[in-house]
Length: 141
Image (tube, rainbow, N blue to C red):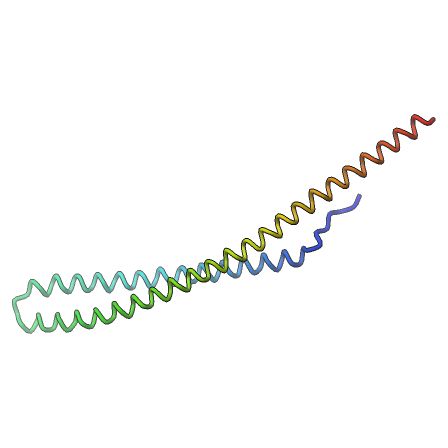
């Protein structure tokens, strides 16, 4: 009995590899985005804490230092927000690449399943034909 051989097996393996690589890159980008978001949140929390502390102070020098620190924090927050936006764009781009590669692999999986069903159908047809020939030969005797 003949074994099933998918003619596009090397292509399927390559697409599976590309999908795994793209998924790893997306996961890395997603982790990077989460790290950048946590940093932004920490800066925003620091700004809030500094403002809350500074507004309760009566000393003019402390308030001046607070405003200077708030200005520095605001610039850092703006810079970090830009990094978050860049990381989000990169994450979305890599996610779409991964989805495209997954769809390519799934298309080959479906083609393989279809080819296997056709192979099985042909095998069963041949087996039935052989059984029919055997039955005809027995009736002839």
